[in-house]
Amino acid sequence: MHLPDAPPARSRHMSETAAVEERVEEQTDAYAEGSLDDPAGLEAADPAAPELPLRTPRPEAPTADVLKGRIKVADEVVEKVAALAALEIPGVADLGGDLERAFESVRDRIGVGTKRATQGVQARIQDQRVSVDVTIVIVYGHVVMDVATEVKVNVARSVSRMLGMRVVEVNVTVDDVRLPGQDSPTRDAPAA
Image 1 (tube, rainbow, N blue to C red):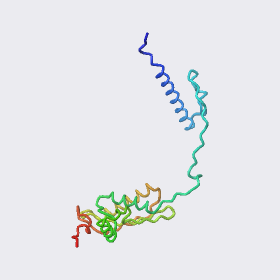
Image 2 (tube, one colour):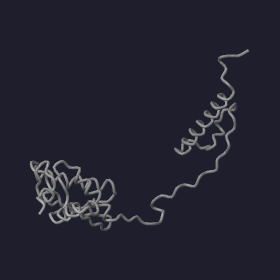
Image 3 (cartoon, rainbow, N blue to C red):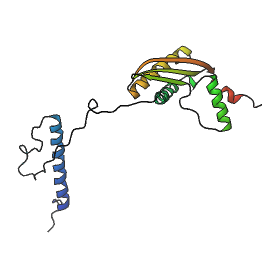
Image 4 (cartoon, one colour):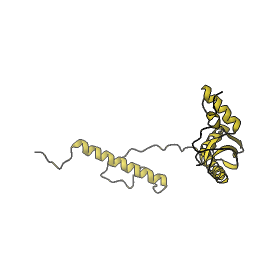
């Protein structure tokens, strides 16, 4: 005779296992929060529930103030973060001064290498304090001072947030103005 309401033995075993795992997880969480004095939950355990094996306590992870070592962030990392932050601002057409962009154009034409991600950005780190110089090209039609101010704020915010360093200075130099849709001036020049 088959009883349709009775779960198969395997699924009953799985549900008991799931219930035990859930109780262990709850007790572990409660113990971690300090609200449970008995880590194994022996006092509050249901007498009908199967016994749980006692766990050996895991060693605590060392905190940053006790762990020895140092973290060094290269200037290039700051420069890349700052370059990406500057390019996020509407009205910024490119990074770098005339010479850097001309060199980049020549390199692009002869097919040697790729554009440097840090072009137009220089960073200096000293005692966890960062100074950044950014050279930008503005798209014609945007207010230069507004775009430069937005670049300054966004670079400082991004570097501070992503690297956890104090940004003490962001200098923005507007080197050129580009017409909307115009590619780099050196690329549009007729070939000699």
